[in-house]
Image (tube, rainbow, N blue to C red; front, side, top):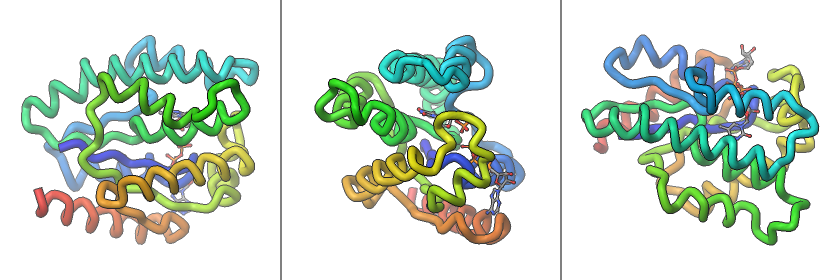
Length: 197
Ligand SMILES: Nc1ncnc2c1ncn2[C@@H]1O[C@H](COP(=O)(O)OP(=O)(O)OP(=O)(O)O)[C@@H](O)[C@H]1O
Ligand SMILES: Cc1cn([C@H]2C[C@H](O)[C@@H](COP(=O)(O)O)O2)c(=O)[nH]c1=O
């Protein structure tokens, strides 16, 4: 089963993801962008380059996803493992659709989803850590072009579109709560997800 954690920068995904390692020692914990491949390194260069072309950046993230799928996600799922990914395809649909909002693409989110449809493995469930853009930007430190409140407001609107389209896949958690309360809510959601399996 593939469970993904999604949300704005600073929503607390990585804090939760790290804490879950103890509760689920047999699960495979992974993330996008990947941190152990040259595709992930290329993505991180694009994140840190304010002049990086947004369409080129989309394809770098998508290349990293393809590698992540074939090298980590599909083999783990084939072994019957629980896979927990800190960010996954929804991050592309939300972030790159926002970055390409003023591009020549008429419907950026649909375009990005179309690219993925042919090869991706959609998540079974997605836990969405919901936080307002101002809190997200403040927590993340606004250190790169993605961590700005105005941009994150567009990203959040895109996540809401994704949730509206597939309400049964998403579990929303209020990420403005304390880290302990957020972790409790995520663990409860994950228990319910696994019980339903
Ligand atoms: N519930 C919370 N309340 C207050 N601060 C939090 C909470 N969760 C995480 N933080 C703090 O916010 C910062 C960002 O947290 P974290 O790295 O887990 O977020 P993230 O969603 O993974 O961000 P990014 O996507 O940018 O990597 C950290 O300093 C963390 O300690
Ligand atoms: C996977 C993915 C990520 N991003 C953005 C979101 C963040 O600002 C950075 C790095 O992610 P991290 O969780 O802070 O390490 O990249 C994106 O725009 N599109 C994606 O597909």
